[in-house]
Image (tube, rainbow, N blue to C red; front, side):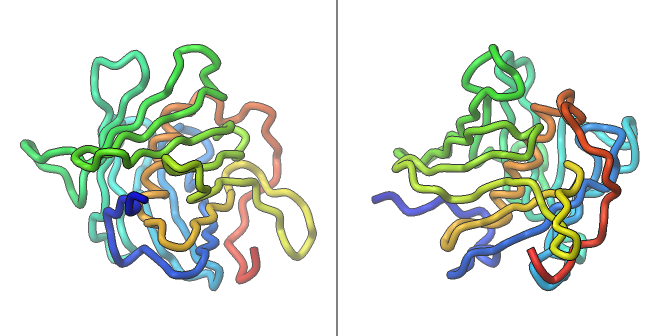
Length: 210
């Protein structure tokens, strides 16, 4: 059995992590994110301030203090929307740790995504489902569920929230920073479908319940 791929040891937990992901702009695919734990504490952030504020071919996942944890960069040209991931803040000459790409050019919003880990033979991940509907599962090569993206329900009203707020459930032993890096790429790949069958609820600050 292959060990799971880890980018940031500090985000690997022995217990299941239930995170709330909030998209900080509703207007442009790939805008900022804030991510909270079940106690409402900030865990990750991705800063962006509009369609032209930064290079959309490169996104950086940071901790609450702004330390760079993971960089994802689009590889061009690529018909399959291939992205590569780097530990920390990428600089020219850095070697990528993994790549992500769609497995098919057909069915853009529901096409599965494969993650290939460099220099770790036999370690790969498959992402199935529809990210634009916030319904995805991340499996390892043995088909074991590692993380899940799903719609979030407001526990005080039992109302399903809009797709700018969703849950990321990370299984024990899987890197939460890596899982969030996958989310950044999925948001870019499926950005045009962000408001497909959308709802109109306003975003809310995460509560201490999931």
